[in-house]
Length: 114
Image (cartoon, rainbow, N blue to C red):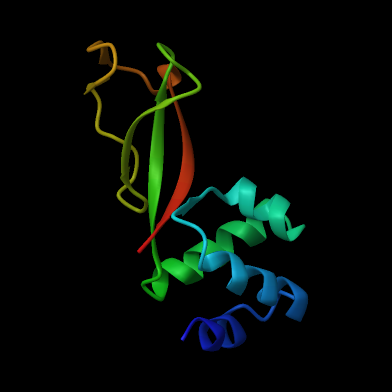
């Protein structure tokens, strides 16, 4: 199934990229777009497009990771990608601070494979 998805939906990838992606899909539980970009040697925007196709095909679920200034290197929350940003005020589950401004938060994306 994976090979047919890769052949039909990701024409911008080379055959080498598709083969490497197909191999990696079996090993991943999660991957971030910047990791995929580095592994395949493609642009971030292309990696995000790849993950979007994989999500549309039901192979993974994209999450918006939420980071707070209290511990900026560790995600303190995650919501399904496509739902938008968290509603404010938002309470950080790490430090229990009520956040009223998006300037205190940062975001990244991650794909969770099924």
